[in-house]
Amino acid sequence: MNQALEAATAGQAAIDTEVLIAGGGPCGLMLAIELGRRGIRCLLVDAKPGTAFNPQANATQARTMEHFRRLGFAEEIRALGLPSDHPTDIVYLTRFAHQELARIELPTAAQAMVNVKRMTGSWSAAELPHRVSQKFVEEAMRRQAQAWSSTDIRYGWKLKDFSDEGSFVSASVRPTDGGPAQEVRAKFLVGADGARSLVRLKLDIEWGGETGIQREFMGGKMFAIYLRAPEFVSTLRHPKAWMYVAVNHRRRAFMASVDGVSEYAFHAALRPGEDPEGWSEADARRVFAEAVGAEVPIEILSMGTWLAGHALVADAFQRGRVFLAGDAVHLFTPTGGLGYNTAVEDAVNLGWKLASVIRGRAPRSLLDSYEAERKPLAHRNTAYARRFADSVGLFSAKPALEEDSPRGEAERELARRHFNEHARLEFNIPGVTFGGRYDGSPIIVRDNAALPPDEPNSYTPTASPGGRPPHAWLEDGRSLFDLFGPEWTLLVLGPNPPSIEAFEAAAKEFAMDLCVVRLPQPALSELYEAPLALIRPDQIVAWRGGTDEGAQSIFERVTGGQI
Image (cartoon, rainbow, N blue to C red; front, side, top):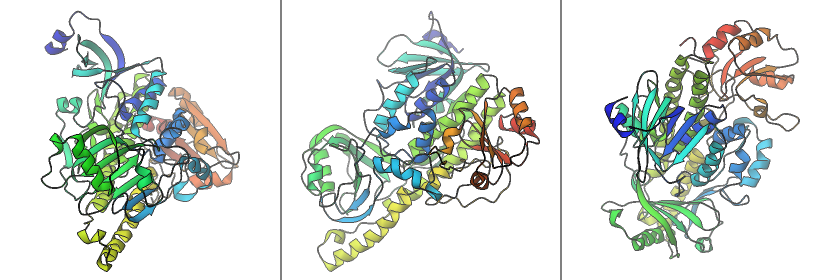
């Protein structure tokens, strides 16, 4: 332990834990849940007094909802946010209270619950997306994390320092409002501590990619207001939506409904020369009125600025016993909702691997697959987010767009065509949601099958190892995913499957918690294009094949023994 840590924590008994998590946003909380359910002791610290007050992210993608379902709280999340019958449309207007340009209609929460069992092809899924503010999601995730006796969740505490000692990590944490520091001894440290990550900075890991990307909208400094406006809906000329996007030459902005009643998250692009740092509430009301095109009384709950125009991925995701996840390793312009959802999957990926190593069921080399799998996905997803941001932000809104004239109508027709196409590009993205793959992973047994193209707006299910298992609804109404075990699952498909004795014997030898699921329906073996498929704890296909030959070698590979 270094001298700074010794001085800060002298005279106090150290907290002994297995995983120290810095950061209590969705990534840190998801990791605590994944570890807690496996009985892994973890301490989570976050400098904030509690979960988020401001709305922040507002779209939970279908893959994230499938993970919440796997963990048993998808219904709780789906009950949060908008009322079940509230529209989830995204609408583009010259100003919120003026002319509608384009709209994409999406199902309400109630409709999604019904529709999901009828959908096939790209949208065959156990869950559909849900529109809910991150502030509500974090509250639910905190409750889930705290339910496990092995988790210690401490808001109002911050990580001060740490040192990788080779066989363990020593760290110092301190109450945010003052008080003595506390020494922590952990097997591993995970920095899920955001864009200004202390963990990343101390590891001296640089960003790669681009930042400061300039656009008329979603590129540069943005002004945000969390507000209450009960009279807003009465100003609309068109049916209400979930998200409103203002397209005009004076004030580009978007606003999402937070509670479906009166609370909204409003974000406006700043014009050249504007400096919002000294703005008053009167300035905030002026900017809001410019986007609405009418005077609407508002109560300001909070206001501030943030920077759009990021497409950044850290150069490394791990150093020794220290890992990075979430915004600490990838920064997005928040189009497509990809930042929050990518962060959740970081935690899902890392959680089972840490637990496997700590339990002694896998060699430490398994952890090297975290960066190998998640870094390419971070590059992929930041590129998609940039593409969506370019599509909406590089559109030039001319002054004539709002004219009551033939020239104005011609400009609006151009805008209609552009934003009808853009809305489907950004908000109908099964390919982005389900199509992420780990093809370069050292713990995937690849079969070299031809893969469908990686496209944002379409997804072709494939059981080729490295991706999400193809989904199906069974005759009894259950999702195939509901049959998967909590850890490893071996699907045995079709009416005449091969023997799996070698897999069962190898599972005992490797102390693997293997759930065998036998499904005789021919349609499932056709869907998976094989009678056997091995599904990882994070619901990724690790291997598929026609016999149990080489089962021991397969298990050694997928648990990191051949890295």
